[in-house]
Length: 128
Image (cartoon, rainbow, N blue to C red; front, side):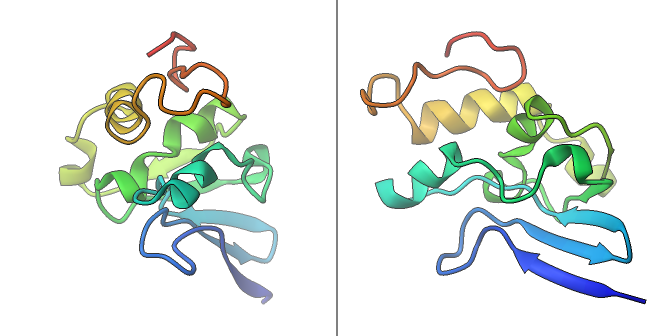
């Protein structure tokens, strides 16, 4: 059995939790969070993920904090079509589009990054 883990977030910070667990050919993303805090961390939310979302088989969410679930809408927008596994309590949290809007309104106020493209909801494509 070939097992590896790759840290895609929450490395050198405590936010943006994303860990890619690969077991043989199966890819499991544990958590899918947004980076929060200082601008240099928040800008990482605009970076492309270091793995093609189409290749991810399943996402396991540990809990519903924004730094563990907030990147899910972007993951789906970029091609993820697998299952998301979580507890019932996590599942009862706001739906991804609400998470998307909340996270970008809270951490990326409209007009705060004039050099970035206009803010859009990852789920619907509508402007925020």
